[in-house]
Length: 247
Ligand code: 1GP
Image (cartoon, rainbow, N blue to C red; front, top):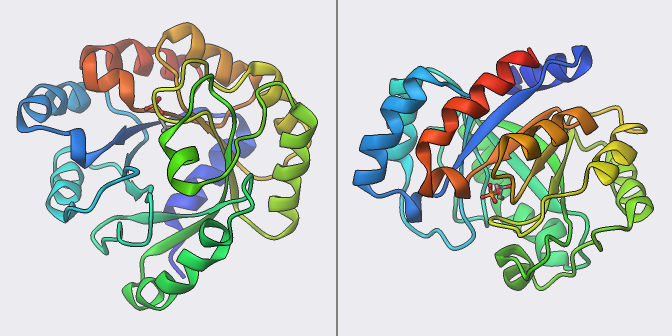
């Protein structure tokens, strides 16, 4: 099976080359925003575009095609549920919400999606998705009807991430929730990273260079930023400058 995106993710994580993904939520991506954001992304280009949202029901294949053609970087699906699938993407984060105990998001959606995904030939990156308390109730928490891991329970986070790795998942995503008041703490990232052998993705509530730097220094291999760039797209310039220092 095709593993181009994962090879990059894994190789970079092994040599400590940090990566940045910009999350695009098609529901919030107006034409006006795109006209401003795309030219900036062409100059200050992240490693990946992630595309997805919690409530998305519209077809977003044209948007995937646009990012692929304009930026020449991989576009990775970051789906809120099974309906958010497009064979046009380069890869799919096949997320299992391992911090929760709701079978729907642990395995059930996956059963429904498995056959079409396999038929599509799309690269699949099985990912342990871990929701961590970000200071306010997140859309993921509400929609998935699961409880996040408390912000300071680093051992629970570590045990959950390790269980994911031992089950054969290929990456772990520590998620404070889109627009979180506080990102995942540096202590939690550090604690998980110290014992994990697979790539560590971190996202949720990262709005400043200091927060991005803290996540990288604590051990995040790939950081995902979304919300802040919807309101302040020009911030991508300083994020990418910081990223370059970690390459
Ligand atoms: C959300 O981790 C991503 O799933 C990004 O979060 O939108 O808060 O940057 P933000």
